[in-house]
Image (tube, rainbow, N blue to C red):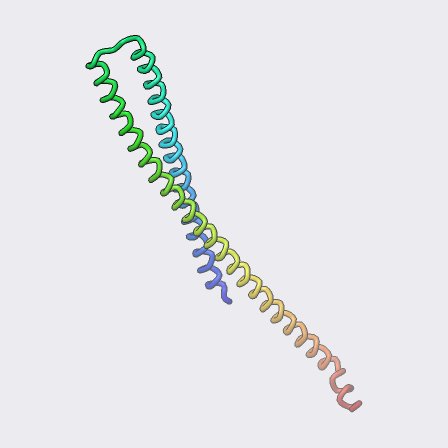
Length: 157
């Protein structure tokens, strides 16, 4: 494994981390959007409950057909708004689920590239260590031959 190969893996890691960071930003945006839509849905539902309670109390006293028509018309539009808000909230939850999955995929990629880079660096260190050991062994053998020990050992055989 050469240094340029490690540089290429470093670049790949940087890119994977940037993609992961972008996925994290998108997840946070999706969480904020889904939370805001859930809150709006809850507020509309609460308003509808309060509206019905108020009008039920008003009907108990007395009402006219025109007022009843207004109540029903507004109540219908309020129900439509809540249904629309429910649909928007569901879609936002789906986007949130997708954003979470994309973040998991990006995090897995970063971890994979890091692991690969770590293994390659370890391979390089081992190769360098073997080369250094071989050079040291060869140097020691030359030193022994130079000192005359090599000749004495051959005579003893």
